Length: 264
Length: 254
Image 1 (tube, rainbow over the protein chains, first blue to last red):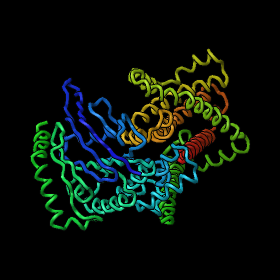
Image 2: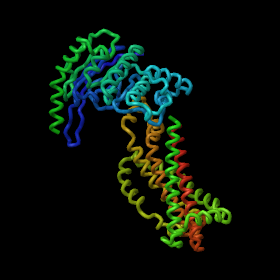
Image 3: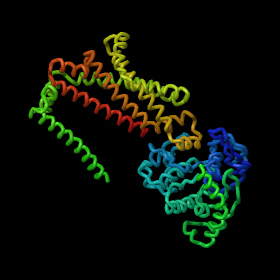
Image 4: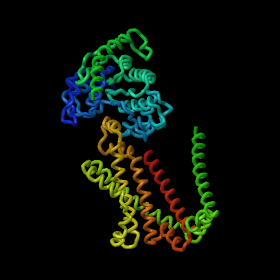
């Protein structure tokens, strides 16, 4: 089950404690087609996470529109599943209970929800760990649990905010392979927020490059690399050219972000 | 792996019991060698004999059950009152901020000094003990419930929102389970202070229970018996902690 996501002229101002305001996003428009994998990349402070929160319905008071399958949505929505950057599994629930959580909320019977949850646990490669608590899992396993839990909600669109941001580079690449495998199987429309260029190129059909604050779309790059892909693709020349091109676009923006953070 | 864990916990138990035995040995030697007067400290061997005598003559389990029953009743009442109040202090933040300092100050104050007032209001009966225990137990539960709810990770709340949870589901499915360790810290604190308050009141009012037994032994100049009665109080607090640990584990699993 997949859907289309459309964002139109999204702008967002935050009020600061000193009475001033921060212009986080400026007329951002993008669309993600059914079954497409799109990444949004930008320097720190470009409003990536604000974009994630607005699309996911966690932040209100913005200008513009978010549409799913052509219908405008406000607030959290049944069709959008979210995976967060921070550790978000429930520490008092086992892997199975974590993944079954949205089904429990939906009133699915215990036997049925456990069978469904096991299917998603297998899909993310955590079979054998269903009875473990998050404290007994590695960082990558916890994030896979969070992904399985979001998938169990059967959303049309998966929204992920740097889900592997806290992991080391090698684990991140291997989990990228896992994401690609899941995406191939489910053909889920996916929007990934990331600051990692390699990850964006490895996974995406298109990469949306954002400018430093206020966040605007600087360029959208089509990644014309053959699928199925894996972490092995990163050694190819074409892959390197995409990474280089995106870095050229990001370099100036990242410098602006660094100057601002050093002046604070 | 399980064997290693079991061995480790057996090791911890052995270290604990060994330290206790060493301390008892030191106390025994201190008194028998004349370093410490028998009127200050009783040798553990005499405390043991006195404990056996109390067991046969004084029916200590009646006293133990009386103190346990009043303390548990006070704590149950405090949980029933303190949890919703703590939730309200979290939900209505202005009230929470306004009352936090006052409640903190009240928690730190020696509430035992209120007992003459309760004696006047309720008389020398169970009511005074129960109210005294309830007043002592409620405040830490209120404060820790508010603190526990305030410290729920924002990302867990966002997970709940992403699954369109209602406010009630958010409270029962995410906030309370997440806050349970902090709330139980409050319950443990309330148990400690309530047990102290109730045993002290039983002692002061000579109102039975373990406090009354300690007082009675003291009045009879039965120092080993007094220490033995104190050991029963310590055993009671051990039973408490086991009960609370069990409830906490059970609550997190449901």
